[in-house]
Length: 310
Image 1 (tube, rainbow, N blue to C red):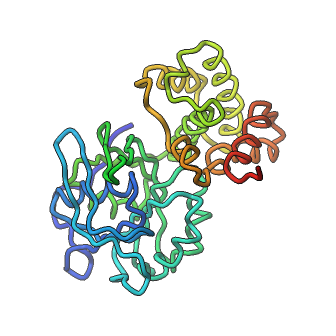
Image 2 (image 1 turned 135 degrees about the vertical axis):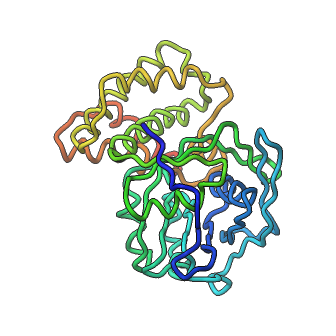
């Protein structure tokens, strides 16, 4: 997939001033984007649930601290802004709606840094007429015990090849976060969803990536991926049979201690993105008449792990 960048030049907004950027949800992904923007000289405004004086990222280049504060009340919003990076989880969109209402207007672009393939449907109703751009996030960032974030690989985003996406490209063009514009974005988004869906197997196993070196787990993952691939194709994603093997090899090559956000949330007793990452395969499979036997077992287990009772 070819990288598509805006040529270097004026990155100012149509009004002639530098574009204003906000990050809503400075968790692992939001902190990464905020820190890379700050390192490049474009410090974003920070909004979230937890008040903090700053946020800090550690990566191969060292550490960078983004000055805050992280504002926690909508009346503190300095909006509307030109670009919002929405980095809350799908389970938190309703709670974040107040921020979108305060920060957005019809000239704003909202780049949604979330799992799944349903960002447009879930975020657009709350975006006050702003253009909503879904993104596929391709980098592992994890929150550390002290609240800082560790970025374990280069940051990369994939966006649909749309005019609004170029606002995001322009904002990130001087940062260490590469941005790709994909003409076949649906396929890219579904491929990432399949990868995230397989990671959900870590929750009932209570194990990290090292478990995929087991042949029985690899076989289960293959069966799960094949049913997910059938659903993705029915949804219009042009993905080849090689997708299954590529994803299994990815997990088997990972560091044994590499986890996933849904496992971290499960261990912390937080609500899980089970429907966004896994339930959708079962839901859309049912709609298309596609059998999903692995989903039929896994999804109820994830739902119960997330929502109880018990």
